[in-house]
Image: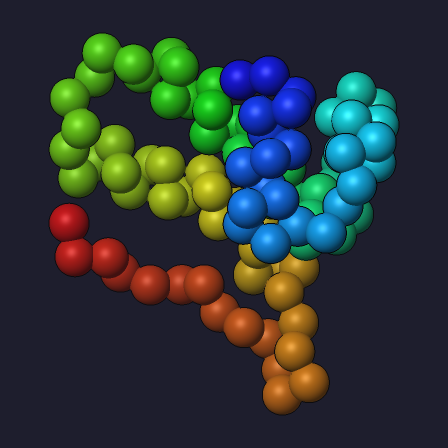
Length: 93
């Protein structure tokens, strides 16, 4: 997955990070500091995972693994005035 694809995927998901800031983050090697950097990190990992499992049948286990990758670290980074927003859920797959 290329850097531009990672950026635009995160942008569609709500990231307000500029493309230059995203490219700097992606090439900098530092850990994510905020929710936008976490979105980009998770999309990068999910893209690599999907590429590595391209010929694996789409099944519940694969989808659970992708959900885990895409939501990794989000509970720690999401905050709202009333407390934390939990992304913990048990999808019916």
